Length: 137
Image (cartoon, helix red, strand yellow):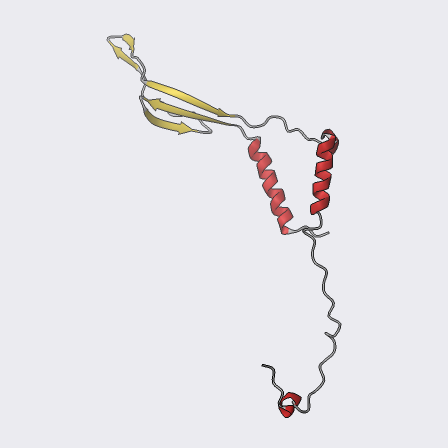
């Protein structure tokens, strides 16, 4: 059985759809004031200089102007597989009618039979239209 190229492309596209729908990402952003300093997807974002200053062996904490934002994009964790029997009766009838109606739209047309393809035309000795002076207008 031959598998068409459209079938292969459709299968690959569906596999990528499943892959990217289950993918989870964590995006970490570091801001100093209102300025975006660093964005990291698969690693920790780089921080600004430390906010601790030391004067005479006394550590004073400055009020931090920096903030971190973490965006979490969660993918699907459970893939559910439904069967035809899980559908309602009305949905089953609708799916059956739709598939039955449109099943023959994408079939190839039958090859037309040319009955005289193996026969050569007769050899003309004289051009009868010119001899009889009959021309199609």
